[in-house]
Image (tube, rainbow, N blue to C red):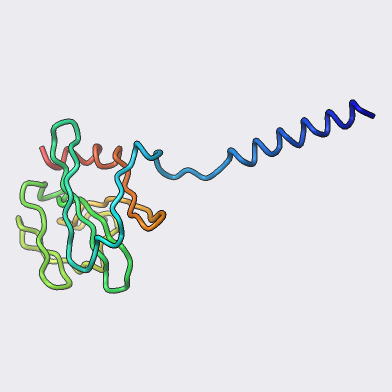
Length: 144
């Protein structure tokens, strides 16, 4: 009887450990991310810089008219990162080719149609915009 209780107890503890340790992880831990308090972001583009081993990677965050956060590299896969983008009302304009985009359309990957603010994923957690440092570092080639 004691052996059955002991085995049942061990199985229960094992199950609790498995369930407790199987949380969903979609981004690196605290040391692997940069965070931006949402309260610091508005409908005006806020630019940030990340040092990726000596390469200044510029990216931005902005709130769209629908209230959703948009993030992107301040660079284009086509035009490069030396000039970036500037805001014009509810649009953003490439400083290199002059193409204009609606801020509400940002946050998607380029579908091969030319100039487009390079995609930078993020998620929201505890009132912060969270961006992977690995993804920022991977985008450094746009700024070399």
